[in-house]
Length: 400
Ligand SMILES: NC(=O)c1ccc[n+]([C@@H]2O[C@H](COP(=O)([O-])OP(=O)(O)OC[C@H]3O[C@@H](n4cnc5c(N)ncnc54)[C@H](OP(=O)(O)O)[C@@H]3O)[C@@H](O)[C@H]2O)c1
Image 1 (tube, helix red, strand yellow):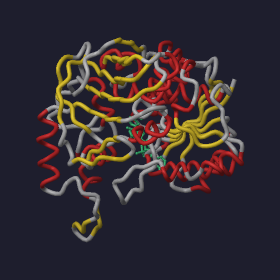
Image 2 (tube, rainbow, N blue to C red; image 1 turned 90 degrees about the vertical axis):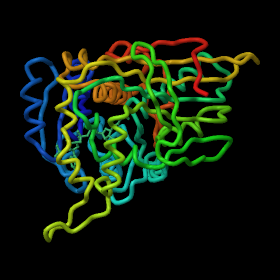
Image 3 (cartoon, rainbow, N blue to C red; image 1 turned 45 degrees about the horizontal axis):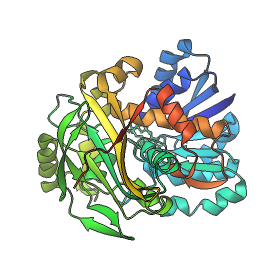
Image 4 (cartoon, protein in one colour; image 1 turned 180 degrees about the vertical axis):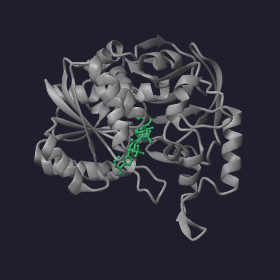
């Protein structure tokens, strides 16, 4: 049916690429392009005899629009799936505009020298994408991603208005290391060491990092400490969900992770301000990334499950209604299937689904759109089919 160009070949891309190859009725051709082409070649070698999808690889510097444009012109994909880092989003969007090709990503743009992620930079491309007649689907991972689809699904099938959303992201997995991050350490540490915030009655309420803590008993995982963080889907859901009064995002962290993080922060290792070291400029956080375990190496060691979902409180036919939609994913099962742990799996599967829906034309709408702006039903069906089945629970335990 069509051809996808995947940019980036790290933890999330590896899962999305496995899933693209499983879905070879839809994806006839796949180009894997990244900075380190040997990683793309290795994946091609592993997968090419397992699929009808024709795989090719290329080297690209996604910080360079010219290189990207040349690659897109040469390979002629129907969609570009950006699974590099948030720093590259705008450059890849520029290249898609020039070549008039649909664009999909999983994380919003973040300038490399400022730890601040916001949609404003990508939303500013709205008119350009409308004029070019192409779709940009933003945030097709799990959170953002499936959490937005769950919200749209709840709105469509269960509520007349949703007033409160709590997004709960629980990783109950154990990799046995005293400190490691489940996806790109630089992006992950920037996210969790930032101030927290939530959206309430039309404005943002800012908190100190990890200031708000709750305990929640997660299905198939058990009781975990979770902390309020700022997260990118809060920004778009606040605009797109009718009747919303408050949205919060909580993520679970173990005590060992927090103690290590505090210590690293205290000694300056999480800073993104460059320093001089032996005559060379280095960024402490990038150096830390280099000495931490590669998230890809966690796959074979991680046991346990993730549980990610949304609790909704709203109204239906004038009465209050409460609902919890969530997915539980087993680290070891993911590893057996695609050689990655569940954090990469829960992002890579929705990335493939988003690319599929845009490529098939089911989710095409010229402009720049967040995931909850589309009809959630085909995505929800695909989640069940492609490895992330979800559960709906009426009257769940709420977060105070
Ligand atoms: N929405 C969600 O639920 C969710 C969850 C987790 C992660 N994410 C997002 O998913 C994305 C990928 O995360 P990950 O954990 O897979 O990261 P990763 O393992 O570090 O992979 C990033 C890949 O991008 C490549 N890359 C980086 N800069 C590049 C450039 N200038 N040109 C070409 N390729 C470049 C890297 O190349 P090298 O191999 O040369 O380093 C690597 O292959 C990130 O944007 C992350 O924020 C989203």
